[in-house]
Image (cartoon, rainbow, N blue to C red; front, side, top):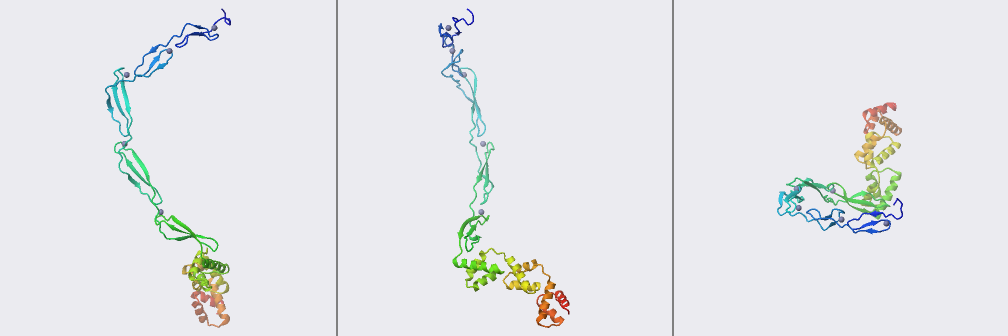
Length: 320
Ligand SMILES: [Zn+2]
Ligand SMILES: [Zn+2]
Ligand SMILES: [Zn+2]
Ligand SMILES: [Zn+2]
Ligand SMILES: [Zn+2]
């Protein structure tokens, strides 16, 4: 018989469950070997030592006396031990930690406010494990004081809001429109401001003069987007364009127009005016329709609010 002999079988050995067979032609010889069983023990089931097939379950240890080595606590596992009467092995078992901590009462670390959450903490008296939790934000305290937060115009609605007494956050917002009379007063006020400078009170008076009620005129004027300080500056420039003023005289004139002392002073201070020149112009103006002695001219100029120095300078300049 040589390799490649077409008559030769290709034998595969018998196993626990199958007889010796030819992989080429399927011929069989003898019978299966059968399993070689090893009996079940405490820890492994009945097993064939040849093919490792198992049957049933491990028997399990038999431990009639269990000793507690350490008790489980809230955070540490416990342990028991005992000797197996069937295999003689010492068997130990883990008892999982209970996780039932003995917490103290919550202690506040930081109080909640209406703008920030608070924090509280508690601690287990056994294992000292700490637990923190948030304290919900408090409600805002509504001041119920409606304040205009966006001014309406003749064409667009405005907004008014209430705020939190503690942190100032907007609590409620409502939109509102001007009434009909207020809308008309608003339009009228806009038109006045387009060709002239006004103080707040001056503009309200002007609208009242036009027949609007004081309330409607006031609401309308307060809704305008106007910088009253700039109005004071414009008004001051306008006065200086047609006549001469002393510094205090111009402040007085602006106050007469309804500007506050502060608005008037700021406006006059912001102008680049040569007050001595103003005194000269004023002197020339007086002399154009009256005659004066030097001292008479100087006291007239001082009466107009010029300083002694400015008045004397003017008198010098006009030839006295
Ligand atoms: Zn064969
Ligand atoms: Zn087997
Ligand atoms: Zn055992
Ligand atoms: Zn604990
Ligand atoms: Zn608040």
